[in-house]
Length: 151
Image 1 (tube, rainbow, N blue to C red):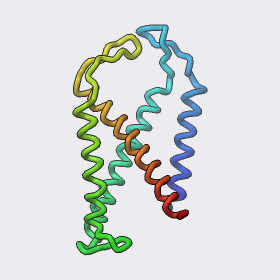
Image 2: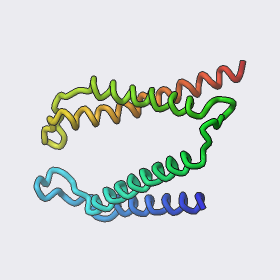
Image 3: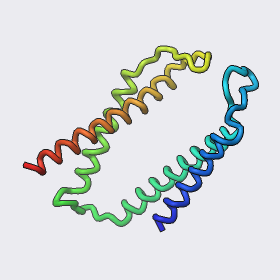
Image 4: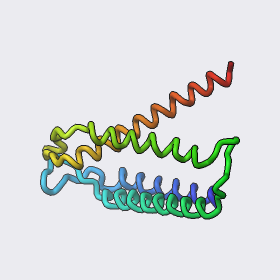
C-alpha cells in the first residue's frame, strides 16, 4: 500500500511540475511585465497545500493511534519511550524558541516589494534556521555514530 501511494505521489508531482515548466511558463506578470507569472502557478500552490494538509493529517493520525496502543512502560532498546520523546521534543522546541527570539526583523525586498512585518520575518527566520540547525545536527550525529561504530 505504501509503495503504491509513493508511486502515485511521485507521478502526480512529476506531472504537475513538468506541466508547470512546459505550459505557459514564460507568461509575463500582468501588473509588471518585467516578472514572469507561469500559468500553472496556482496548481503548484494547491499541490503544496494538499500535501501539507495530508502530512499534518498523517501526523495527527499517527500520534492518536500511537498513544492509544502504546503502553506507559514501553521501552525501545531498553530506553523508556517517554524519555526518548522528551529528548526530542525539548531540544526542537528550544531551538525553535531561540531562533524566533533572535530572528532578524530587518525589512527585506522581494520582487521590488518591501516586507517589514516583524512577526512574519521572525517566523520565516525561525523555520528556515531551525531546519538548517536540525539537518546539521543530524549530519554531525550520523558522523559521530559511524566513527564510534568503527572503533
